[in-house]
Length: 390
Image (cartoon, rainbow, N blue to C red; front, side, top):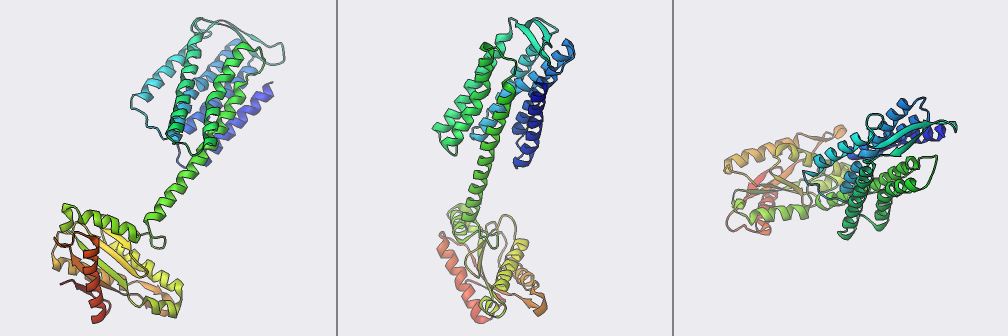
C-alpha cells in the first residue's frame, strides 16, 4: 500500500512540472492547486510509513494542509477559466475560513475536537490512522459541501452565460468539481483501507490541466485572429481598415482639428520587384515601416494603407507648417539612409503628401483625398520629396 501512495505522490510531483511547462500565463492558483494536491498525497504516503502515532499525526496535518486549501484553489481556477471577476473581499475571506478549518483539522494529538480518539494500526504491513470523529469534524463536511456548491454554481453560471468554450469542457469542469467531494462522502460510509481521494486528486489535476490548456490555446487563437484583423502581417503596422476607423473617430471629435495626415508612397517599388525580386520589394516595404516606427511617437497612428502606401496621422500635432516640414525632411533622410540590398547598394526613397485637418475634413475620406492629391503632385514634380495640400 505504501508503494501505491508513493507512486501517486511521484505522479503528483511530476504534474507540478508539467503544470509549469503548460501554463504559459503562469497562473498562481493553478500552480498552488497542483502543489496542494502533492502535499495531500505526500501526507498520505508518510502516514502509510509512519513508525509512530506522533509521526502519523504530523503527516496527517501535512495532508490536511493540501486538502483544506485545495477546494479554495480549485474555485479560483474555475473563476479564471470561466472568466468571472472576483470581488475584492472574496480572497481574504476564504483564506481566513480555510486557516480556521486547517487549525481544526490539525488539532488531533493536541485537542480532542476533530478526532475524539486517535491511534495507528500497523497490522496489515502499512500504517493507517484509526480515529473516532469529534464534535467539530462536521465543520469540514460543511466546508467541503459549501465549496462544492460554490464551484458548481460557477460552472453552471458560466454555461448559462456561454463563457465556456464547449459543453465538453463544461463536463470536464463539473467532473473535477464533483469528483473529490463525492469520493470524500463515499469514504465516510464505505469501510476501506485505501484513501480514494489520493487518486481523485490526480484525476482533478488532469481535468483542470486539460481544460486550462484548451482554454489557453483558444485564447491564443482568438488573440491571433483579433491581431490579424487589425494589423498588417508584413509590417506589423495597422491595416487599412483599422487606420481608417481610428482616424475617423478622432476627426469626428473635438481633437480632430489638432491633427495632420501624411500619405507616404514607396518610390519605384515595381522596378525594385522586377529588378531584384519580390523578396527585395518586401524588404523595402519593411525598411520603410521600421523607419516610420522610429520617427513617430506612440500617440501617432501608423498604418499600411496599400501595397506601397502608408498613412501617418499626427493626432496631437500642435506645431505649424514649418515644424512639420522639418519632420518630413527627417523622415525622408531616415528612409533613404537604409540599405536594402548590400551587394547592389540599393536604397529606397519615398514621396509624401501632407494635409492639415480643418473644419471641412471631418471625414477620413476628405482629409485622405487632400493628402493623396498632394502626394500625386509631389510625384509629378520629382520623387523623394514632399508637398502640402494647398
